[in-house]
Image 1: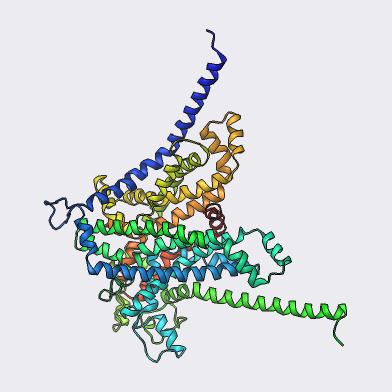
Image 2: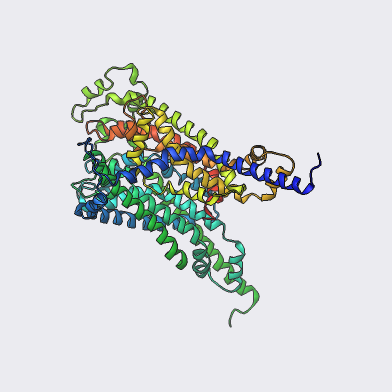
Length: 305
Length: 318
């Protein structure tokens, strides 16, 4: 049989294209099926539950309630109190992380003896389990025998041992401190990596133009760090807003309600009050806010910084 | 007379630059010490308290370095199987603080084994599932490519705490409750987006010509991935494996929800169980903490350069 060369090429092209799509689909199939079962389905399902008055204390009557759960949550004073705690926790944590990680990155960007060892050592807090982080700081903050009281007492800063986590004014800052301690290493590495990618030529050109160290830092380093800064800011904001483990490990929401943040509120609502509907609604509000915040940071700060 | 000669001026400059250099070295030194104290101080205190006896740990002000270091706490962890009442002797010796070792002390090693199994499985599955996907997204142009990447990343924006209930239902319907498979599956979903993200950025940074050349030479897609791309991506693969391992080793919330007995409980759960029990001695809790901390810290310090290089590929481009 005679085959026209034109058709032949077309045929082969079609087959080639088919092969490409086929292999792409095959390569992506495993990851997509895993995520479909253990991520996408749960996400959609919890959206679905947020419209029902689902309480495990009353499992046989599950009425569809439209937006009632959302309205209930949003008109709850306790919820807004927990929102303000989450906001203050997030703001103080992210600010501290940015300042500390920038200073650490500046230090590690210099060349000196022991730099490699130092940059390996600073990863330790990042690597340890949150549980260990929790028990470590719980023990440090311990008002009876903890290291913080001991240290301050020996240095003569305080006259007698004081309550730390048990004092509702200090709870959030102290938890934030242990959160920051764990998060700073990764943030510092991210900023350092960005810093290292700044071309050396820029500094040389600026030097030739007569800019001193300080000016070079303001006009070259800071603007060039934008991508790294943005990444750290978005990532750490997301981590801080949703953070749960340390609140569970250090205070369990206490004393009284001093560390009732949104994530803790969700936990209590879902697993102690067994009210899955409102729990899911709260979760969705938290997720949407996280989305919106990430978007806001990218749009506004992204263009200004 | 003004020092206008060349020598005099260079003398001034030399002195000035020497002072600057000294100042620089001094400030580097001071900052390094401060940083070390900040990072290692809490760890050192944990380590020191884990070697203290029941009587010493409750001293006021604290003993920074134990007067009479003891291995009793670690013994209680490693040899608890052989002793029925582990701390009987110490309890008698020190009735005031009631040196008490929980009966769950014997669960620590099995839970560590569980953690290890889960983490290794998650790492393997991450590679198996994540590498082909990342390669396809980086080098094959197909319909819905961007959508796929965004979908994968978006799954991580939803807070874990929001997903616990639906996760729980899925796990229950799969019949995996109190089985380490429940953790493997959920940790895979938690870690794989990051794996894909890092590897996509890395594969994208490799030239397309590599891909084309291999294809022209008659490699199939799978062969191109195996023979050309995988050997080049070792640093990123190590970084990705390390992240997956550490995340699985450290994860707390999901394990808290899905595991009930020592058949599936991981190390963080057992350790957290100690911290909420006020009768347990602090020195023992700290020893358990030390045990939990050692493996991830060793890994992180050993593979530090891979973490940095792995993040370089992914992060800088944002």
